[in-house]
Length: 185
Image (cartoon, rainbow, N blue to C red; front, side):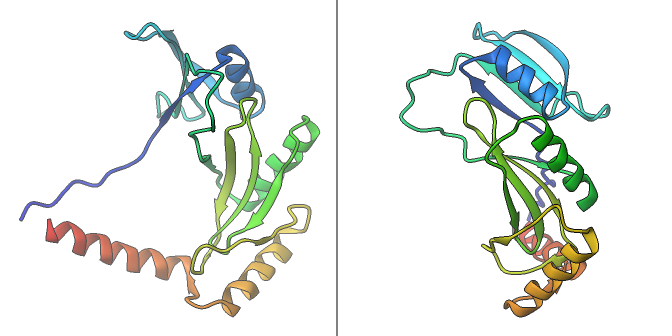
């Protein structure tokens, strides 16, 4: 049987009602830079955006989103940070720059903060924790606490829940499951 190649999710595109306002928000509040811009073959203006010099675009914003949609079709846009300290630094930046409605969540396997962009799209900024616990898991998080205290609190919470593993053990078990799935195709 053929083995499927590994898939790496690298970017997403979203339609916007106010494209210029969204580009400004993602540049000023999330630190993206415009790597390219133009007009698509469909006639929509678009902006390619990145924070990684090795990746041409991580996000593409298009104009043309109707303003009268009955609900927001985007559940969330999630952005992975490198460390808990980076998440705490971003939390302080967000608060200082007027981002409101920030929700801080300890998922056990990750620490997250959630807020919305100007068009109401939920954004998650997160970092992986060194633990795994069954999901869903949603516990309070205080990003103003010292990192050592957050780490100890999360570990204690995860150890009380069923299915506790270290992140490393969980990654090894997932690698095994993925390898077995690929062989079956």
